[in-house]
Length: 361
Image: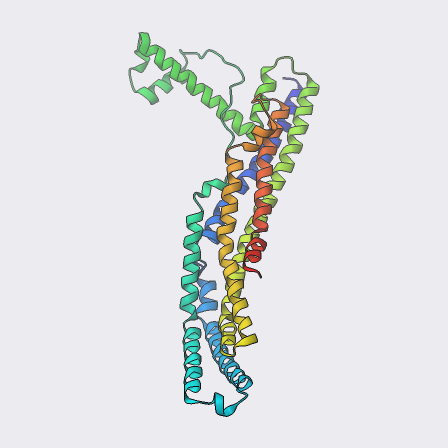
């Protein structure tokens, strides 16, 4: 190969590796995020959860909630009691006190209610998430070797292959048995060459094979192909990493908001003691907390739907009608992997707005 061909091959390899780094980052990081922030119960993050639900912070929140409940109760009762003779009856007093006692019991047991709600949310999320692999991008597939060369069946490598695969005495086989051994050795060498191409050129190994097979490939074609593959690999890898970070931040933000909501639960539920406008505080807290809990199933459903586009190469089928390994079709394959990732990230980012719209927040 000429210097131009070597340079073009190097650029193709660099582009393929850049794209591979981005896709590996997407597969590994978002796969971990899926379990850590969405499928697991938020209570499994023990240190953070215990700080807001069982520690001194929660005890102080319960005390404040009970005090506010008593104040709201008196305020609401005085506000609604226009006729002392009609309202301050034994029946009304008993009903109001019973209402306050039930609410106090609810506030003191909010930690149990929150724990069960988080468990239910995790169960729904696990039911929606059919398989964590739905989010992953396919690894580059095996490719045809550059050229088919008849192996040397008298080499030491061939004898080592027979010994490791079939045991001692295999090199003395004759007839059809010998032919089957040689066929297996050819397949072994083919797979080995394929793996070498994949390791060297990654997602763009097919374009290298295509150019190398064509003996009439010009220097300009090598350089042009290398530059295009490098640019596509850099852009595709960068977009994949950016989308991965955005997905992680979205899921981590949900977990943070859930933990942030929990200490305010007693104070919010205290509003039910005062009735009327005071109840809006409790209703709003329930709506916001429910939105955060339902956000995980919506995110996972979006991932599953968009993951179909990634796993099944649907976009590649729309963009390229043939499977010929050329610059155009390989770059379209790159595009077919990046576009579903961008769509998935955008849909996940809108999951919160979707849930809030349903709950009317």
